[in-house]
Image 1: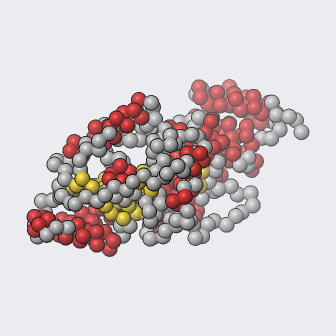
Image 2: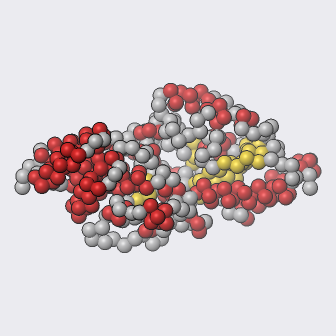
Image 3: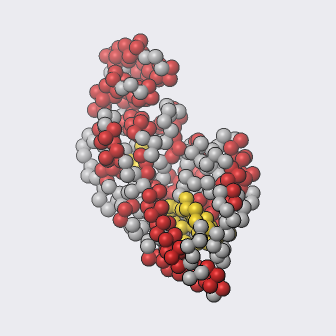
Length: 392
């Protein structure tokens, strides 16, 4: 049937889309106009000028603000949300002497980009079949041009909290977001008003002060960003990541809207305990093939294995795991990547509790062979730290 027939009968098409969305496993759906996001360009440019962007965002700010620049004659944007679990039903058993890392909840299960794209493709197929073959769509998830939370807020899915995340009434902020631009025109839903009130728990709890309190974030100070960089992690963030090797959930955990929220609607989002809480020491020597087999289906693997290995080394240092010393010394001696060598030296300096002349001698020999400036600095600092420890 033609689009006009449905539009002439009011909201029938919209209602059918909502019904279908529930059938195919979309937890929340909303409809927004495709008008420019007034005021957003100024905010994004100000954030960019302050150096608060992560660099992972879409580079052209205008295309993030004006849907007409990325889609011919857009009329509406359909926003969807899928709720993800926050607790494991079968966490890995505690083993004496075994240290584990942790992936943030948003990386549990199958890569959410794939899950959301699947749902949107199925919804688009339904709309094409129900409306008209000439209908046009542009779906996107996270890495697209538009700002997901801005679209979702306009579409009535929730409000943008002080932590910059969308907060829904039903699922808190534990939702994945996606959107579809279309040339179909729908009656827009009403935006949800700001609901944080005077609450500042997320701002106060953020270990690095990355949250600015009004929904803006200094992304480069966010621990989630820090775990995804590929270079040497700035020392001020290393202790703060604890044993987390990808992402950060702190601002979500403390949010009152998230209290008691734990939904298990989608089988593909269920966490594999050995993947989301992996043993740290085996990560240091994991092959490319084994890394792909174990972690390749997770969103947290998108930057490759080096950042996760670096983070695992930091986590071992934070846990002061002496049993990891042989593997860390081997990293310095054998690994071809300066980031791994340098980070291993830092970790060793945290694990060694007293002046250890054998370790000092090993690091001095490594320093003589080291050619990378950052690794030289890390090894030099590690030697000084260990030298200054008391003999016991």
